[in-house]
Length: 184
Length: 233
Image 1 (spheres, one colour):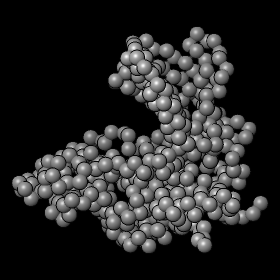
Image 2 (cartoon, one colour):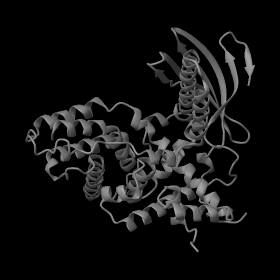
Image 3 (cartoon, chains in turn red, blue):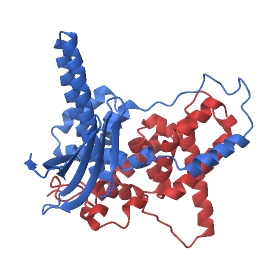
Image 4 (spheres, one colour):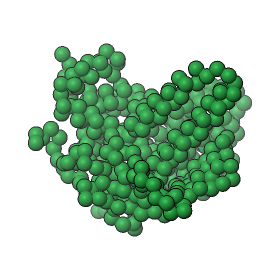
């Protein structure tokens, strides 16, 4: 890996960690995932197409590495379904008011999405990639990307919909599986 | 006639429609309150999603991760001169459209403010006026940046955890510390905070009470100066 690419890799680490956190839902696991993905990238740099975006390539490696990790984990603990909803240590152990702040509820809603939808939301909504960039990064057809995105966004809207809209912050205790389009 | 289905509205919010289709969507939206509500909700969730994962972006990369990557880099075979495509590397650039796409309404207010200043600046004649304009512009920009930092501290920091802001150019810095959180009868959140602003070596401490509005911005309702004189806003 040449010096410029190394520098660029270091520079995009915060974004890689953010994407990995979205996938793993756990800070420590996210860092392990980023480390594993960087090791792959460094040893297989010859597979990177020169002139394409390094960040997109790294997002792809992170996602495939994560899928591999989940598969081997599932084989090992076939009877356990691990869900780590605390993506951030600073949000636990505080009082109920703190725990129901908006950002936390949005984060938790994203964490309830299936893996493939979460990856799409992280790239499009959080990273701000265009549909084209995201479909290239995940190596999925545009139609697959948009259908995952529609399912993810409608699910989030349903989870976070609040009955008395406009009366305050979007809070966790107001989460209800209200159907969109229901007439008052 | 196009149909305002969910995928169209989502593509519209993500800025993925061509301008012709986007205009058609906008025209139809004005007559369909349900769709309009969905669009607002999508925008709000997108904006919050972005902020919800911002902490990771701004915190330092842990040393152990940096060390592990450096070690792997050191072990990897050195790049062959010329083959690595020097000058061929596409530099990372942030995506500006994404910022306006998911920007909070606050950003629009900032834009309006800066635009206003820019207009005033054009009319200034003398260099003294220009210097004064620049100084006040810098102060206004700092004020805007500090307001944004305070908003972030109130939005994401737990009580007792400070958020530091500084501008090395103007030599101003500030600490914002949420002190206590309340929820009023209607479910709105209000937080007491402490603000320490340092400019030209002098620190001024104020305490405030801010409440969260529907669009995610925190409005200060009450400010208390350090000497204890209350100043309702």
